[in-house]
Length: 159
Length: 159
DNA sequence: AGTGAAAAGTATAACCA
DNA sequence: TGGTTATACTTTTCACT
Image (tube, rainbow over all chains, first blue to last red; front, side, top):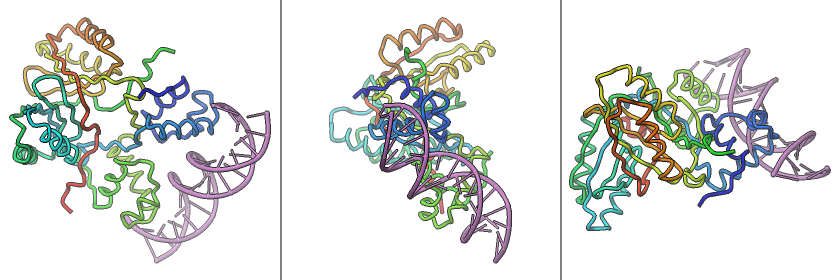
């Protein structure tokens, strides 16, 4: 699963994790490589799915999605087929931004964003109705976002 | 805070939230607008910080960061100045990808990624030592990632 | 692998409707 | 605002080290 990355690859990743619009020429000047070498490495990183996507980050508040909830879900693990369909349900629901299956008693942690509490209530009722294995859930509302990102801390690596 | 976005803006955002490499021409063809109209809207969206960044998403596993932890932190709220420095500490720590201040008894929720459990232990010891107001923390390890992203569900909007 | 240069594709900005 | 055109960049591809 881990792919061989040299110093240059890691430096490129550190840069494009912050700004994917940087031209290969600029990146090359920064790390000491020609533009075409940077381009070739970028295609390889995309090819090997080290870079899985290049996306625009939208400010939720400026488009009317100010609410973020951290939701703990307790699930009955007895029926594996229901677990599979729950995962599909989560994956298909746009309001659920992130979801992990975590240590503990059959728990999932969800990050959910909605326009208001009503929309959140509707969503969670739908979740309970359409997934019989969800026993209960516990909601925490984000009062403030300290940090948000998916950046992998490559700059911390030795060398 | 909320900015006026018409149907075209929202369609553009839906597309670039998934793929920021799409050319304005392709986007225009998809939504029925000329390339330059799309470009102009894109610059406006960047200008007004509706789009806050365009970034490459790196697969943590392929670069040797397989561990994700969901960490609940309990904080003494008595001294506000310590709260401020805790927030700064979190913001400055690259291993902490996300952090929210949430409802409950002075709690933060953190999403942390590290190379191994040792690195995680070191990090959390450092957190406790350098932030006197952190009373205790509780760790859940992500056994599986169902979904990961920062996509705002604009496609759900009326019209 | 890396470099450098030509060809193809994109973005940016000025102008008209 | 949206569309069109001209110019400047950027990426892509290819020949060579």
